[in-house]
Length: 189
Image (tube, rainbow, N blue to C red; front, side):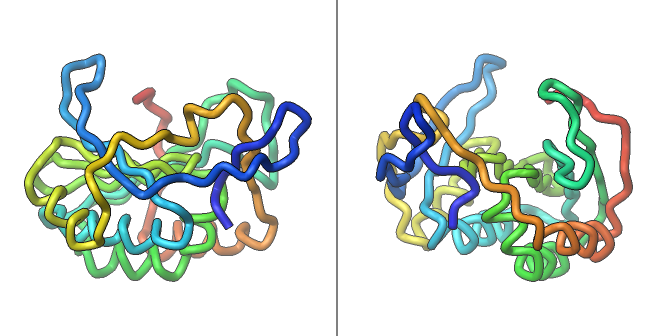
């Protein structure tokens, strides 16, 4: 099951599926990045392959956009949890253990930063953004058979339904503990 699905105006799934592909772009701030679209069947493998291309040690930002156990009004700032100096193996093991939370629940974003300042953002819709546009990331995508293609993203859809699963609550607590993530004041970005 994906983090989010495209729906009609009345909330019924419309059958749209994310295409597998990536494309380069320049952000409004002038940064280069790769934008990656992948269905829920391959999203975990693509995300972990990109993580393996990061220089160690890794830093992790877990951004809880929605606290499912204590909901706040829309527009309330998210909660940020951070850990630094982690080996890639530990991070990918935690991503695997919490896979249902990370890859199928829209409550969170996961930001991975490499030792050289490069980063991978898995957003709450299930789209991956990779900074900067670097050959190592293009190679990782090629190794997962993700083609360069101008694909539509779920964020381009008119109506999107997000999934928040109660059974992921304990998984979220375990993920924070497994990586030693500590809450820090939220910073926009």
